[in-house]
Image 1: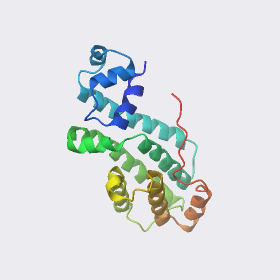
Image 2: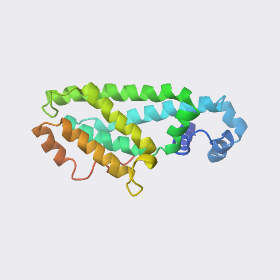
Image 3: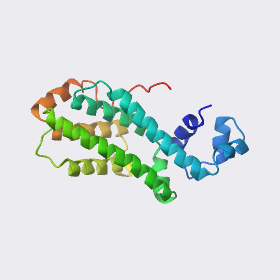
Length: 206
């Protein structure tokens, strides 16, 4: 049995504060004693879940983008996959992480650093391909975009109740890409957004 394949989604969807080892063990159909033989503590299990989800996301991103030469198309597909990951994550996870499990922040920051590194390389290649404008400080604009992404964690307090996560994400990503695209980049973007950025990418099987 791939334990993390079952445990990680449970943690990301339910959060960590109210999740007990009893609950996890029951969801796996094993005893709590067996669960403690796999993980010495709840903290170890949670950190392992973050590591697993980050690696799984990285692998799926590589599979999705393999063979794509056009950076604009790759960015659209990457945003779609990121939305899927967000939809698999409940709002309680980030609230719990900030308030009760600050020790998880380094794991989250590690994933964020990898994202920034990948995006930086994509921007550089996009400029070379003529898809993205060269006269933009991408280091700053990427940070600004990430701040917007942070707001989605608390969307229930910030955005109107009748607005969905998909709608917000679609608007943010579309505005972001249009703001950095050249005329050629915009043309490619239109070709790949007949279906909105919020279209969920079908998950890969393991």
